[in-house]
Image (cartoon, rainbow, N blue to C red; front, top):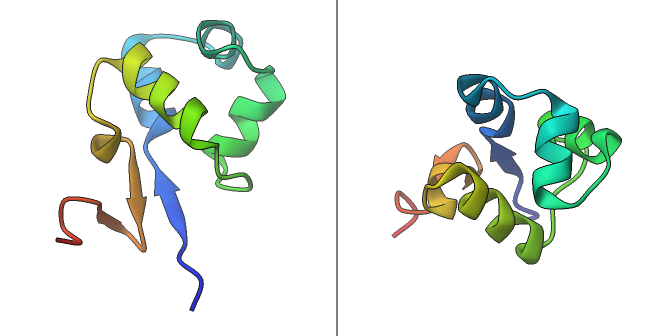
Length: 75
């Protein structure tokens, strides 16, 4: 059964007061990529997920979750 990955990218970006363009520049992707990730149409690579964690200053588990549960809840 394939797992679905959800994220809090839009929520965290908005809390920082950033546009999609600003976040895209910070992590090195296009604004369209940010839009696709926020709409959960695209699951980012591990490298990009780690960049989000670095930019937002929080653990990756607070940004991405499997099947609606955080990775910490999966333990």
